[in-house]
Image 1 (tube, rainbow, N blue to C red):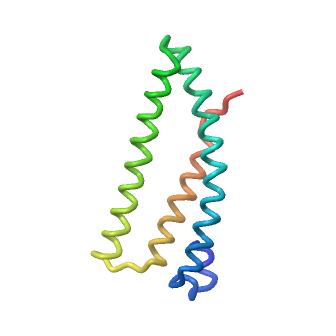
Image 2 (image 1 turned 135 degrees about the vertical axis):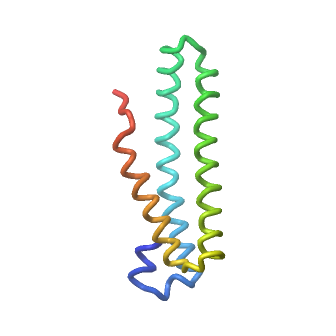
Amino acid sequence: YFIAAASNPGIAGHSGGAMVAAAIGGFGGGFVWTAQGSYYGRASEEYARESLTSIERANAYFAWIFASIYLAEEVILKLLSTVLIKALNISWFDMFFIYTTVAIISAACMCFVYKYP
């Protein structure tokens, strides 16, 4: 969305642009969630085998880690936008730039995820 808003500044204030961005993000998110489920299953099996615990216990442990990180990140980013926009008076354009930067860093970090055979 940031790239679209940067190339066409008039799009930033229109809900149509946000809907298109949400559709693209939702479509991409579907692939990520599917891949995450497969990876999660393999990691749980390996962890259960290495730690001599059940797969159910490993799944619960990984679910706790994933949910904690995911929800903490969501809360932090929502609070960040509220504080930056309300208290520091930054624009939505700048906020989308920050979110885009976070997304790029997150995608780059995927290069360091263990690759299962």
